[in-house]
Length: 171
Image 1 (cartoon, helix red, strand yellow):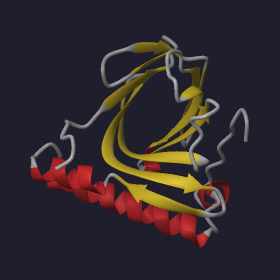
Image 2 (cartoon, rainbow, N blue to C red):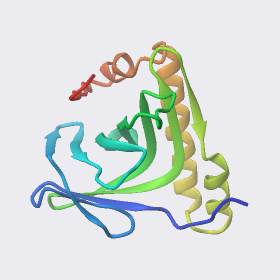
Image 3 (tube, one colour):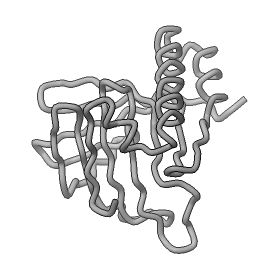
Image 4 (tube, rainbow, N blue to C red):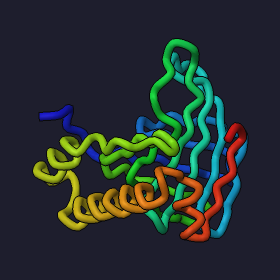
């Protein structure tokens, strides 16, 4: 059995320029940008040994959070983007993302790995997710894997078919 935990929820609040992590730690956000298809944020990650900065897009219609971590020397990973499978809700101007356990590690134009299936199954069996949420997480993952594979593991090419164009500071 995995390290069983309830789904993690993050709050993104463009009005206050903050991002509240699942532990309740409030972090200042350098840039928020809302687009018809989602929400972009960019912020430093002080105190993190592995990475110094992150950029993320919440894409509610796809059930994904796409992140580019700026890894510190010695902590690099074989990935270009990290895709969290999430449920996104809005409360006024605030955005909430509920992590549905499954993740996709994307190596642009090379391939991908789906990870944390064991966490999803354990959480579902423990009643931490409804059957509908677990099914949604799987269907979201299958759709993303299929879309990425059909477009040569090129995130931009796949998203262009959905009328989504992501912009990044360093890509």
